[in-house]
Length: 376
Image 1 (cartoon, helix red, strand yellow):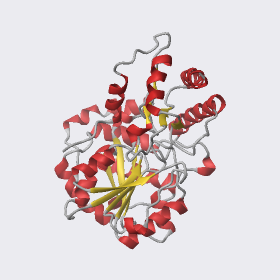
Image 2 (tube, one colour; image 1 turned 180 degrees about the vertical axis):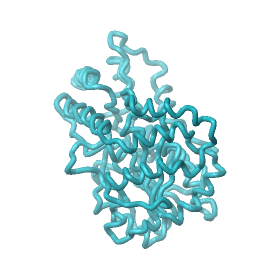
Image 3 (cartoon, helix red, strand yellow; image 1 turned 90 degrees about the vertical axis):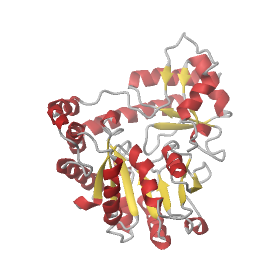
């Protein structure tokens, strides 16, 4: 398989001959990894269940974890799932990579569409599935929302959306997502929304919608052809816990669960026990969300950037993203990701992605440094 270099590998090559200004402490704003301690109550749950390492984990997940995830979906989106409509996963990365291979295996000349720019696992899954790719280009002109023609959708076997979006911070309403559900039913393709940023939002009156809500809106209450994936990594500052789920169409999930027993990526039981308490608690999520909101308030004040509906990214338009990235590192010792490393067909060109994942003090300092660089 011929996989593209990961964006961070490309960044290392881009900067390998650049000497950073050591007058400043290095600031890495490249990766979407929260820089906060995982809450003590989650860590304690992990420690207190370490004796369960003696058990093999079941691919289906422990019942308490499924219940916690079902409770989360019900509390957050007012969607009631049956136990056969959700599968715990080892984060969402593994499922985003192996589900397309499962779903497209028996299809001759499969076609997959996904948002562009993108999380590179989508592309890797397409390569591993030997699938033709249709890019759903997210641009300033279309307000970073997903659109494909009916002619393109008729060809699709699998479509992966990602809203709230990484890297553009674009969002789509329940009504806008419901159009995609109707197309998935009309043209009979599997529709996935990667919703791992759904909990990093800043206005309680404008929470990001789930594709499950959109499915119910158009009367598709059994979620035919519809799946969502979500993760605890961002909401709980616990990416190392590797706790995610895929939920929706029970018929698809029944067959996918059988496939997963062969993949062998079940989460260790102590990790599942820690995930149970994390999925069931909202207070710590509210706290982290307030920190991210303050970071964006600072960015608005310092850089004049708009506060997004969700995610912790700034998708900053620049003149030349490669030169911007090199010079920013050279002059201010700040690392960002060139947008062209996150897209294809020139999507992401003249943008950089900035992850605001530090505390308020560090964020303010680096934003002032960034402003000084931009102002030249």
